[in-house]
Length: 325
Ligand code: UT7
Image (cartoon, rainbow, N blue to C red; front, top):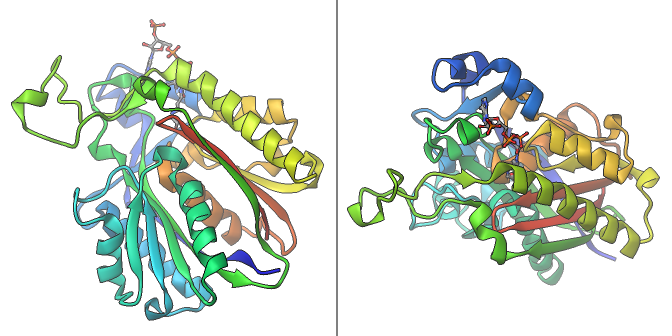
């Protein structure tokens, strides 16, 4: 049976590192608070030449190289992002131009921090119904441009970056085995970015033009643990897999305490869970593909391993995916 395999991965992080100590000089916070409440020590901040599409294209180029493919061999580009360079055209079209992927269709997908797994699921459907099709799936964000740098509740949490993978069909037995996606729009007020960046006075409310990310952190925390836990439990049960069979869990990287609660809930040891939130903070849709690329480069994945992704983000959206590497 042909499945969709990940043929190559890549990632790109901005050069600028922003430390907790630097944040102490920007808002009333401390390295100690940020470290104990979130696990985050540093995050990357995009500078000139590091727009979302530029980071995405750089990550995409590395994924193509890892897969041994030319850009012209790619039939589609899907970019998961909530911070595209422009409202139109899509980030994916800018990536297509940058890479010279002239045979590729291109579109963006918005599922907030869950975007990469949503995009991978969409790509999987394309690949399984179109023989020979190869798709570049990217998660890319520059949330540093959308956080209120005066709001200590949010500005310490997020970072910029991009991760990518090339997917294609294979009869090897490896590939995407199953996934489950969920959403609950009734909870949108707990985590949102209401408007596109704008100078429109009509949008200015309470000194906030609505373009900043806003979050009721404690509620989001609670939902995130429960939702990701349930998504993983259901996915494993439906596919007759037990946690002991899973070699590596790559969860969305939002907060080390969320990840620890999840580990406890799922009864999975720390060694089997990939974390890099310490270095990059929450990079939204980019977090899982960056983590995946690092896991691959660190040799954490062996052929035949069962790998789990689980994600949670604004919407709310969440989900889980099971793959054989
Ligand atoms: O990607 C999916 C979306 N995001 C997430 O998954 C994030 C989910 N939430 C979280 O990670 C956590 O809720 C936070 C890290 C945002 C906050 O941690 P918490 O343990 O839930 O803290 P809290 O919201 O209960 O706030 C505790 C206190 C508050 O002070 P008061 O009201 O108790 O006096 C905050 O004002 O900590 C204060 N606080 C800070 N203090 C120092 C909030 N941010 C900071 C800060 N530095 N940066």
